Length: 261
Image 1 (cartoon, rainbow, N blue to C red):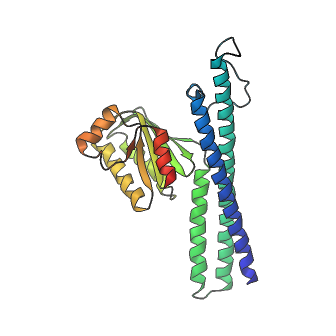
Image 2: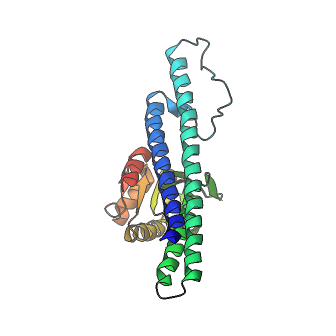
Image 3: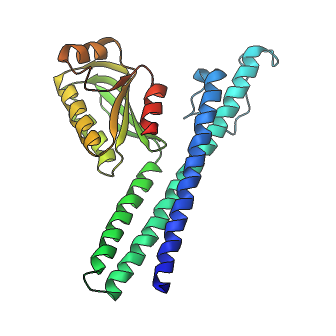
């Protein structure tokens, strides 16, 4: 049926954009490993300026330290380029899905029968998927800069990473709930919370973690805590939640598990 051809073309465009995003993500993962092996801890991937020339840490450009830092900077720049590629692919996918939704809408108008329900459902599903891809293309955002807690969100592939710094308690737990809802409301259901710099977590904070662990798990996603140790680990142990909330020693480990789902 000739009327189906534009829909098929839009679906094909979405699939191609998805594949491009996957390739970019795989490249980003390889570059992350390279950066870690060459001293990337000395370079911030979010603030490194690709336009700036390499600055060796000492006066000897041929020293091992200078060579390692040069390789790390190159890895960061390549990683930034791969992430930008992934972002563009997300936007391309969203645009294709939005075109698909409009084509479904046209079929509903042309065929106002029972079969039109199938097209209406397809349009609704396409718009929801498009909203998710636009969400995944967003740059890192500061959801909260409260005197007691700072929450910073970004994406690693299809995983939302929330970095917490400060205290998660009765004053701040509702803000974490709002930050997580900003992801789950758009069907971004794989969440990793980096709690390395979280000083404390009381019962209200634990309640939010349990709530969103349940929401994501029920919908086929996950919520993992990365960098658990010290007071946070003790809070989980005392509350008996250590066996309920999945934890990982490092952010890299948590991302490996979340991206594998």
